[in-house]
Length: 205
Image 1 (spheres, rainbow, N blue to C red):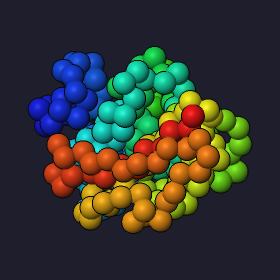
Image 2 (image 1 turned 90 degrees about the vertical axis):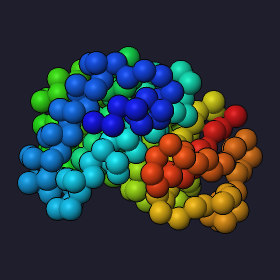
Image 3 (image 1 turned 45 degrees about the horizontal axis):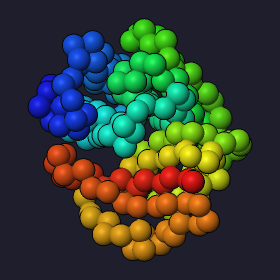
Image 4 (image 1 turned 120 degrees about the horizontal axis):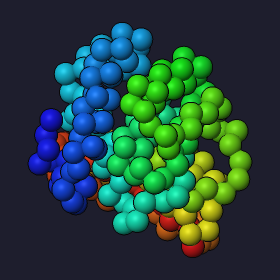
């Protein structure tokens, strides 16, 4: 496990309980998760570099963990399960429309013994209401992700969307995204990951 990179991503020392749970999740993804189609056949060899560290990076944009965070289109629990490990006092709501993926996530949550996770089988485009914290990793293209998050964000809320790991996104304008009234939209780069991760951050005043 790349402890040094994880600690750079977190901006603090990693705790033993966190690393144990992340290692257990990585092993579940490599074995049962991969066998059930939760990750691609070629992903097992790069779980840490491309999935777990990438998921942990979302936490860097909340100096104080939110009370509730919704993972939109969580798939097999990335980044939601990793955030649940790092934020034990935060309720993580993992939303996906696929019954198969939902069953896989519930299985992983039971194995890891996480008490702060709710797994919901629902289409993310059907969600309503104001949310204080949203994360999304590859569930929608950037423009669609921004539009959905803008609709769901509560005043004072924040959304973080994972963008490309292979091509730089120089500006919000290049992505075709513009902040509306009361909406701040920016792109930040996490250079501690290799290749760097470009993240879209949206905040509503």
